[in-house]
Image (cartoon, rainbow, N blue to C red; front, side, top):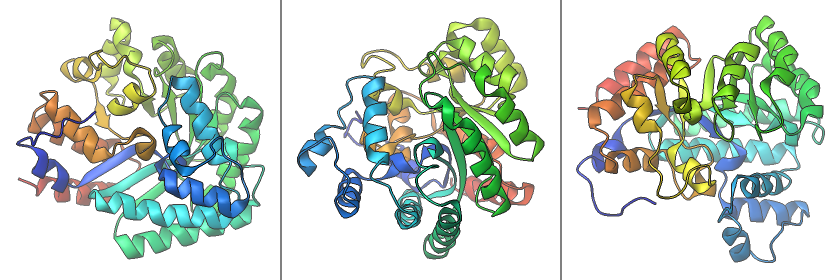
Length: 338
């Protein structure tokens, strides 16, 4: 997907300190990692070999992507799996000069399988070791999968308990939008907000602008994940611009999952031109054979200027849930890049 021809901005984009707000811990694991984990844990994947498992990542459509994501997540059966994944994720982010990350956990897929105290200790240890070894900051936001609505109360309780343990900063909503409107999760999000958790929601990826409105109105979402279908509703675009709601856009992901046709222009261009508060993210990078650096390089090849790309990075700092002092330090660090 990325044109291998060198681009004048490549070196600057590789070196630029970055902030990422939309990436999934489970989806950030290499196919080889998932394959080895499944073999270690006695889990059967829908593939007879590692090569076949790698080929399974050629997604036919969004439903197939969800199928692969769920299959991969079933290989993660112990707290130690999550500790190791957390440390490895820090290394992956550090290698791309991503200095601050807020990452999702697909809690609906594991919240019933692993004792919570064990998980909290695993995350505490993994976050501490990852930061000490790699010098980057990662914070976690468990999310409720819309297509597993029976898990919503359990995920909320898990997230609140993890907040008290000092490992979670917010509650998210992910999964399949169609047939699972945001209104069905309003009570859980209200309780999360009342307890001081930040709230974010995937919306406007596989469904239209009405899904974004529901995330804003029913959930009071502080950020919108993907949000690309906002361009279908000029009134919504005007509202998002006036409110400067941060939108976590993941361009390569939208093509890999079939949300956008391979030859379709990406809405991020119209969103930037409209003055929306856009951040750039990678979503599930190994699953899409990409990275956050690749997302920036792809945009440069689409004609997006250095100034605009740099502004998107600073927008991610401001849209993050970091403390004011952390944000000031991040902005200074990013602005040091010429």
